[in-house]
Image (cartoon, rainbow, N blue to C red):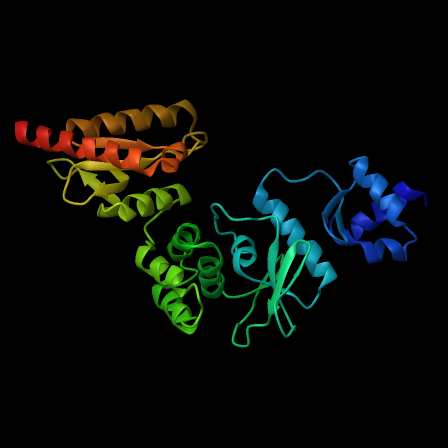
Length: 310
């Protein structure tokens, strides 16, 4: 074998990932690995961990590749926190996916390139995934809140509740179990803000942003006309008003093509005919909460005028 053959063979051992120790075992030197990384025929995931082939486009897929490599290095590890959330197929928002939290039989927390290693959770009932064992969804979500804050956790927990991977009682029980943690207030806030009706991270972010600014919102509300005919389901309604809030992701209509855009336009026209005011929210709007709130307030004032003039 030449160096190229050796690297190709290493890439086949674990579906594209391998360790420095495995490379050395085949006689592949550190210098060969360094040259391959410089030539971009090999990618360095973390200290002592490498991957062949092109990097995935999605940050979540790159994170799972890192997790697979770490488990080659540590076969006794299980995925925790944000890594477990990603392995369970739950959406994430704003998480640092360049490193992974792991549980291993260690006495205290350790850090290494690409990972934070924590002691095993003695009561966790691990679940199997194609990326290795992970802690239960409720533990992963609460850990996400403790590590990364309320807003990031709600975006994932909403989907977990929506898919019935967890129940509100399970989340509450896990938060109670972590009562002594210094960041437990983040998890308690997550419990107050989660909503199983939410259908996307963008919708979750919009709801949390506006509720944090004092608005009361209802999720996934059916709108019917004066004859009771179904007009549409809307993401959010400002409670007690005729203001509807719709989150528009960048790919919301891509699957349906032009027909989906036309259908949405007709739906919105019908809502306006019924006296509703629609506020559309994009990701960029969430970076300016006060501006978004001002838009919603203006929509509320307009809805009141329309109602008064009807």
